[in-house]
Length: 442
Image (cartoon, rainbow, N blue to C red; front, side):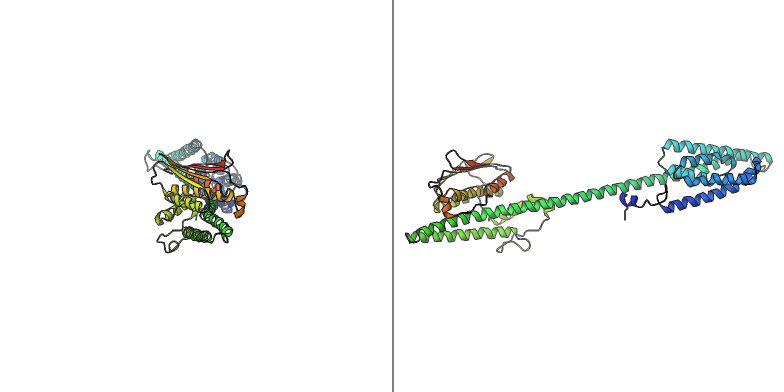
C-alpha cells in the first residue's frame, strides 16, 4: 500500500533530529565503528607525529565519532574527514559523509565543491605516501607510472562511488516524496469529489422530487378541479334538470377515468426494472442521479413519453378547451401561424401551461370569460391565457376548490427549464394573464 504524506509525517517518532529510532541506531553504530577505526589509525599517526599514543587514539576516536551528526550537519562531517585525511584517518567517515551529503537537499555546487576538495585531498595524500614508498625502496619493482595511477584510482574510488550513490538515493527519495505528496493530493481531491458528488446527488434528489411533484400536480389538479366543478353543478341541478345531471355525472366519470389514466402513466414513468406500467415494453434503467443529474432523469421521463406516445401535445389543446367549456367556462381558443412538429418536451410544456392556467381560472375566477391564444413563430412558440373578472364575486368559492399555490411556480419552472420566458400577473380589467414563450429548438 502507498503511504501518504500524512501517514509519513505520523511515523516521525525518532529522538532529536532523527525521523525514526532505527535511523538513530544506524548512525550510532556507524559512529562507533568510525570512532574505533580512527582510534586504531591514531596509533601510527601519534607515532609518526611524535605524540603520546593515548592522545593520538583519543583524537582519532573523537574525530571518528563526528559521524554521529551526518544527518544533521553533513557538511561538517565531510570537512572533518578532509581535515584528518593527511593523518590517514576517517576512511569510513569520508565515504559515509560524502554519501550523506550527496543524498541531502544541499545545492549541487556545494556538493561538487566538497567532493572536489575530498578527491584532491585524497589524491595528494595517496601520491605523497606512494612516492615515499618509492623512495624507501618498497616499490622498486614497479615503474614510475604506478604512483600517479594509484593516486588517481584511490582518490576516484574513495570519492566517486559514494557521491554517485548518494545522488541516486537522493533523487529517488525526492521522487518518492513527490509521489507521496501527489497521492496525498489525489486522496484529498477524491474526498472533495466524493463530497461534491454527495451534495450533487442530494441536490438532484431534491430537484427530482420537485419535478415529480410538479408532474403530479399538472396531471391530477386539472382533472380533479373539473370533476369538482361538475360535481358542484350536478348537486345544483340534480332535482331541477335530471337530464343535465346525468350529463354532468357522465362528465365526472370521464374526467375521473382520464385522471386515473394520466396518473397511471406517471407512475409508469417512475417505475424501474421490468418495464413500464400496464404492460408497456419500455424499460427504464436505474441511473445514479449523482452521475447524470436532473437533466438525464428528466430526459429519461421525456423519452418514455416519446416512445409510448402517452405525453400530451398541442393537438390535445382543443379537447382540453372543450372540457373546460363543458364545465361551464366561456373559453375561446385561437391559433396563429402554421402549426408544425416540435420536440416532445416543448409540446408537453406548452400543453401544461395552458392546462394549469385553465385550472386556475376554475379555482379563482369561475364563470369568467377566458381567451387562449397559441402563436407558432419562426423560432419559438408563444401561448397566452387571459381571463376577465368573474361575473359574480365569490362564485369560485362555491366549488370550494383548494389551492396550494404551486401552479404558477410549476409553470415557470417548466418554461425556464427549456430556456423560455414566463410572465404572469393581474390585468387592468381585474382579470389575470399568463404568458409564456418557448424556443422551438429547446
